Image 1 (spheres, helix red, strand yellow):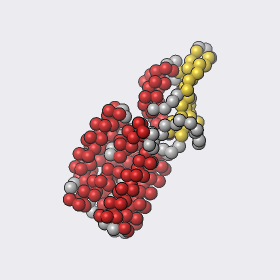
Image 2 (cartoon, helix red, strand yellow):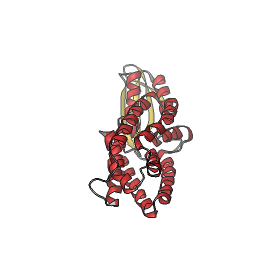
Image 3 (cartoon, helix red, strand yellow):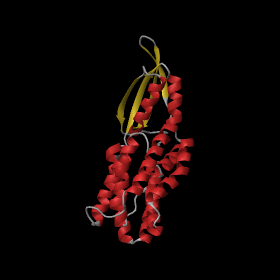
Length: 260
């Protein structure tokens, strides 16, 4: 259903109104308008090298889920006809197209994968160059808006900006990706969990010894909320008897590497 919503919002609302979707979907829509190339076929082919990049630099689980969502989304892109539905009002198409597509993409992200494209490239950039997804997406979106103005007109570019804004707010509402949490992990396998999480999130982790009925290790790290499910998966695999708790964190100072 999430993949269907992602493709539906693009094909039935954004594209017919000559609005460009964000990320790789926007690139596919550009080539659709210029050459008539099928959006789904483009989306799959453009994602292949990015999926290889993600497999090498991000992680196997993330890429497995992403491969599935890319394949299903590509099928829906080619199956759902491009054409107006419900309304031909450009503003309504911009708003509701972004909401529907944004919900689909955000649900996929919450389940542990992504819709591919810019999500993969952004995570790789964030991991190695400390460029947040927000900054990278802003640069890419600016290019999309410029192309929209050249391909259609200035009014279409302005509506595209509105669509991007609504889509971003939809992401934030579903994922709360800008919110941080401080996590405490009490475990017997402190070194292994610390090493695994550090490799996965590229973050520093503080540890100290604690004593109750036996000596255990306490780990402390700050994460983005969207990383919670992945952290719990790692902890369960290494030490199912660990105790994990988290508290909301509003501010951090120091070297905090933002992957999301």
